[in-house]
Amino acid sequence: MVRMTRRSALGAGAALPLAGAFGALAGPAVAQGAMSENAKKRGFMLGDMEVSTLLAGTRTVEEPQGTFGMNVSPEEFADKLIARLHGMARAYALLAQSHWSAVALRDLVQTEADVFGRERIRTEGPDLRLPPRDALALGMVLHELATNAAKYGALSNDAGLVQIRWRQEAQQVLLHWQESGGPQVRPPVENGFGFKLIDGQVTAQMDGEIDTTFAPEGLQIKLRFPLRV
Image (cartoon, rainbow, N blue to C red; front, top):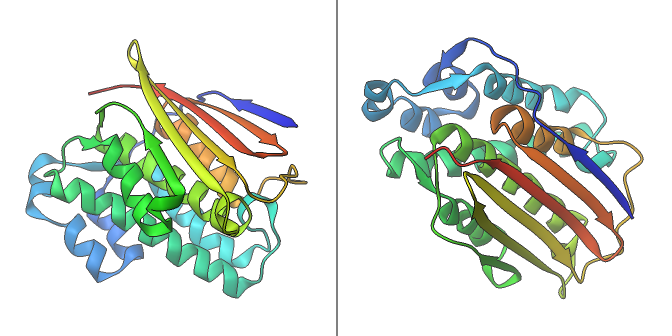
């Protein structure tokens, strides 16, 4: 069993408008939502960490490293990038539905569960709401974890399950992702872009902590981050 813990290392930076940063990469469909009047009126801004994440995502096509340290071809990297943009688009859709205000944590979880199989992903937790910045970051984290589970973990066979539980503790959110019933877990030789993306979203975007355990029976991820709504 291998366990790793990372804490926030927040760095300040200038913010860029959401529409210009994301729309240019994600295409017309997402750009249309990003440039909505609600977003502009509310002055919703995209920090430089999100921009860096998007640019880093495009660069992975050129680097022979994949999610959680798996070597993949450039074609597979292109597929990963498109999937990540779709994951971000789902989070943006929830923000648009909420008129660019707080998003229910449960909705973020269920959106990914709908894509990867709600019958295989069990959820439990109270009604908590997250501001846009945290909602986008957590949406990306959940997408990366679900993608990894579908390819290499509990969702890669017919018997595995994922349990996502969250709770409020004082002014913090504790979220636990636990896989079971999948192939035996082996720690990666090195962390690929997917794991680095998760780490960056949690520590830099959400000012949180991540505790990762590569238990043989299934990957376990524990997140702790401030509740800001």
